[in-house]
Image (cartoon, rainbow, N blue to C red; front, side):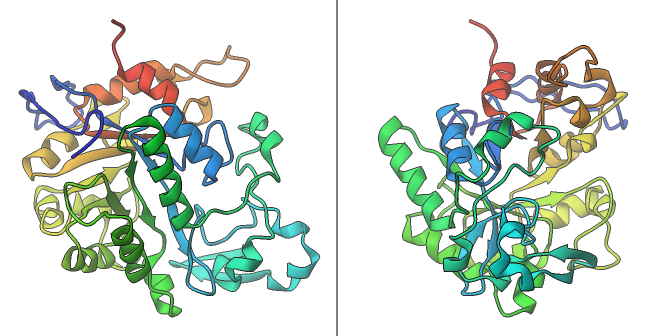
Length: 350
């Protein structure tokens, strides 16, 4: 395992089995820092500019969410619906592509990557997804194309040569059951590209993540790259109706996850409640699982009430305090839209 904070060494103080007990862990190394969709607090998400800025700010890993084009190319978008993250609505030639689909049980209207070839997507430009929250990012609207996963891999290789350090990849397979159901399975192109760039073993700086279960089990049978089961505070995997994430986070459920994955990716509220740290990190570690928590953002709208600050002109809160509290729960990694500020909050002053 390569990169800052990848090795957890020393003694870890066991979490209390009582939910919401505050029991910070004594860590000899920082958690890994995963740039959520790149430095998406400062550049439009899932653009090469966002990934490069995150790398320059010292992120250990960059996270591309992966969807597919009509011609089977993996590209980086948070969702396959791209009406909110590109200028597709201003392209009259694609007006007839707008449609309504049901994705993982949710009906949504818009334009979808699987209805465009890569060449057609190349004519679009990225836009800030949260313009009201991040108005400064709007100045970059229209500048960047939707990147392919191969381009992201090439960027990582170039930045490794420039910086002399390994840079990790943390791809998420988005809606894998849906894509498989329309004849665009993600596993083969994902593993082929990773293998072509030399990523094949658990020692390589790669984590593949998914909210679904079936594709992670299929990946486990096909690769030794590390896998992360994403979980949320509500709902359950789209491919396992009737199964809840809450059930998956029981002692038995975590043991089941450990049979096919190397860790879990819980939402931040699952490890830090208003009353303090929960018992989840300790239970996961007891099952042999790493814990990588998502997503830490600076803006008040995304922060727990105790870390919000109403007097900040940019609408930002006590991000450093929030990051520090999350780190004290004993997590092994954090996702953040603001890698520079997260790194500063994690690293004690000399």
